[in-house]
Image 1 (cartoon, rainbow, N blue to C red):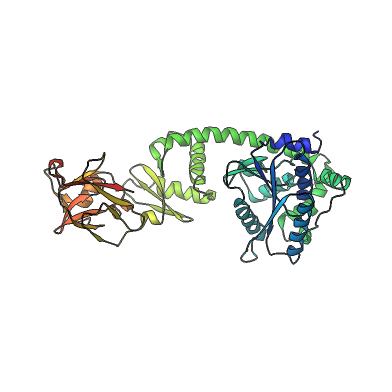
Image 2: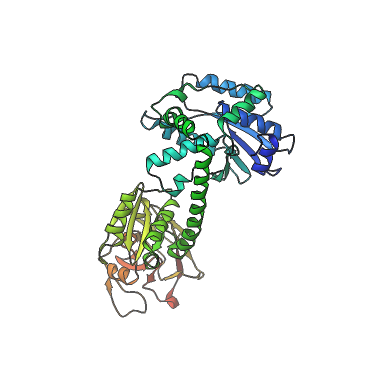
Length: 431
């Protein structure tokens, strides 16, 4: 069994001299023990250490707790900061407080040299497992609290996971540490408190080593999750092209792996849908008729299918611009609604379209208006050209058009009615 001392912290964190450690300090037993260990560890290996107290404004004692933390940090010569957060409403308070806390702490982890340390211990692991079972979590949730993971621009570490709360109490008494007893820790309305005070004592009484064996099971699940992540990431690389997921590649996978790839793709955008939503995506979008244009909303995104690909789009990316404007030989024209810019130059650049006029009007839409690209014998409505060019329907309204005397003379990024030898300038579309 490891021994709780500063050397263990140095070896576990494996910090470099240029690392900047940030401790999430609540003033409770766990974080005060870690504060003391870190302060002593600086004598073994120099590093920059600071502590942050997040003031949730929930408890009437929060101000005095902040003062206590500040005083303890001053005594140990540790830089200290406080951040206040606002939590709206009282429903799902545990979740809201945790999210607000990590958002505030992210401000202090601004580079890959920063490490955020939290004082989670093995008792927290057991509580997290029971909470995950209650929520019906998958392997990621059943793996428990990770000892290390990415956070903001740096990493988050939990160096005390190998120790129980009782071991932390022993350490605190040995070094005569002071700590805060949060009155909310006895409030049974919170699920974690109910588990801590009502369930785990019964489990430990019946099976004294239950926490250790549960942690072994969580470690097994975590390894399986790591293996699944490895193969899922490899499969996702084959399927993903920017914000598109190639369905022709996805269907080559077994159904279970398809679900994992879909979830990993969505997770990259901060989305973690319920299983029922994923079933709807597969039934109503992925398996829709080939000529259908299905749309499914998730948070601030829309999922659409076109030409055997699944697209994940923001509201801006499907917004139809209404603004128009004049071009009078300016070098750059800034477009509305996140549609980028048009750049004009007398020198040809790869992908640029030839323009035979020196002024005109830029507009959007006009899908029914006829257009004849240079070199083509056909004149067709613009919407037919877009179909031929495989432009997704929502993008067709967002492609800038250059017009002269009521006629489309260029469809930015696609075609021009001017032959290259007749160009007076060249137009590039920067999206």
